[in-house]
Figure 1 (cartoon, rainbow, N blue to C red):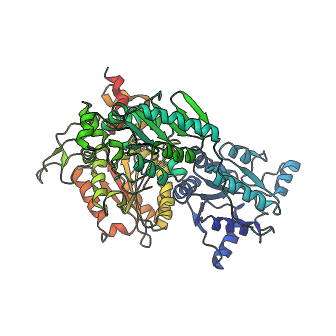
Figure 2: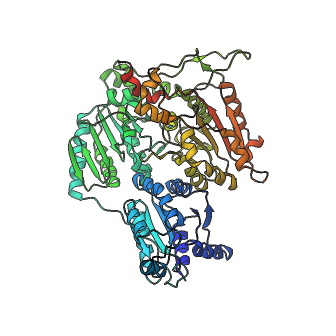
Figure 3: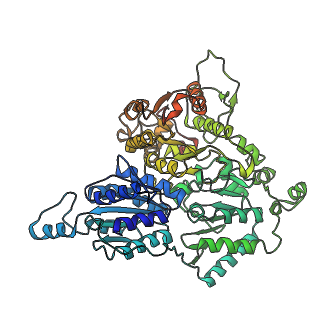
Length: 638
């Protein structure tokens, strides 16, 4: 047994199948041992080399969101600092990753101290890498003694699993083949327990809020996914009959076919129907694992007394805070409390009579129907709301003007074949993709399946894709706190590796894509069937313009010079990354007709373009934007 084999054995025990990274001389000894172990059939761990450390970290992140833990390995200094951004994102987003770094030997550090000799990738400070990573990990170790390595490795891996956040292992290159004790037992994850007294007070305070409310609503959040609480959350929803929304980051924690699902809520950036239902129909909003980020609150700046939020190991009930309460305990105790007595009916007497039973006792409470009955401007039913998210393939937006903010384009009769096909918009693109996804559904209800998963990047891509209807659990992936542009192009490598039977659809802006375009090389080499939609708005950082100078979109000011990108021929990158042995295809869609043709080909299994990854360059107008972010232009039109 040596340190490399020890690590490989522990990764195997944790079920980690892929180690993503960029090799370097300090990491070489480990990779040599890994090759020996694979040749001998003693491990299933596979090295996946990526063009960039960013890509390696994002791939490990995407893999971990599904599998539960991921790993990336790079060399010291230049590799470690390039990987740092991805580990920082995983730390904020609570994704368990192992960052493994091969470093110079202790002897080389002594040479630096005595005669000033810098070995490759070294900095003048011995602990520079370690100190930086301590800011974004729950454990960071330098391993320079093979005999002590097992304890340090096991401690770090246990911390990674227990805290659900990244750890850092810096291993000197001469230690990788150093002898050590064999692994004993398994890595144990230990979750902190709630303070039982405080837990009881938090549940009691929450129950009091529920008792005083008529129309409560759940807001399922990221920690439902990270802590694997989807089953508990669904049991709570089903038992109480209380409708739920999700955050963007928690999108698809449950099937969005669930009869109590009422959309993605993210403040002013929600669909107007969802926001009115969440803010005006509901009188108590209950966030379970929901993070109060700028993205989740979409322009809102506070919560209020009519909120309960359980996240980050504490519970806020109105203005009262209860620390040291773990989300799993709170969800289960809340379930017990709310189902102990017959729940209070929701809605007015006339609506209750029409329903024939107390609303919370049914499996299909429809707050849209309640809101419409109370004169609030929402669709008359949940099904009417869901129907508005997609338009038939043969339909097109009426007229040539942009739809009013917050209002879906109206369907019009199919245009004559000779007519000019309407130019694409963000909203129309995602409405049509919604229809494409729905056509691929197999089965109905919460048991429905779909062959596709979605990976969205930040900015306009995320705002546009937030209302895609995902019928399977854990079928939508995005960063919604760290919001690193380019994340999706690397993360989808890990998503596809963890879900080989699903086909990923990636939505990424042109500026974001330019950050990590090299990772298309990894997709192609691995023969993945990813479809990557590059949203090309004429070479422009649209979200940055919207956040800093939104009046550009009202036609009142020119674009900021720093938001203008150098334009690429994105579809032709298929010629760069593809080959006869590893094919890749590129398409350009500029209007409705070309989008229809592209989706038809993507959905046709026998079409040659489906032999490998596909890059679809979606050409959009520079001044177009998703309706979801239109609230940012309100100050331009007082």
